[in-house]
Length: 141
Image (cartoon, rainbow, N blue to C red; front, side, top):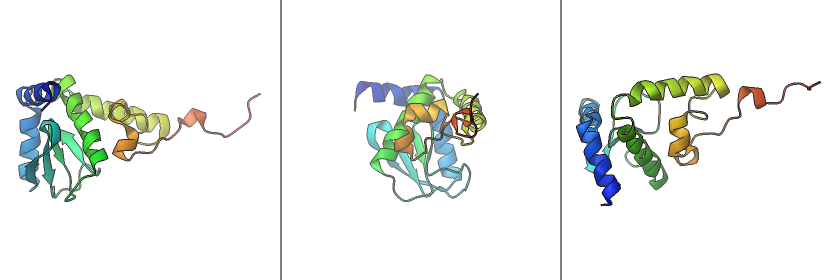
């Protein structure tokens, strides 16, 4: 495994985000399996929250599905790196704030969410919605 992924894995254990992700996986009834680049893939998560095809807590990628596309795993891996950069739990309020800003800007929780944009909107399966003020709707004069 690449040195940067080993560092990310260690950082997310130390900042307690990966242990939190593992706890969520256990409580959510997900089966865990090693994934690429130090990720832990947790399939069969039973709860409907959060509403997403997959979500990441530390190095743990949780999903209700029984498999994930390579693109989505890459996207979620970038979120694991974001957890490390945010030093763990501060990622939660920062992500929620970014989601709120995106909803205000364009009406969608991901299109202008800085975390989703940096993780790759296309890889995450998210639309690219224009900002409300960039939508047509009147003539300038």
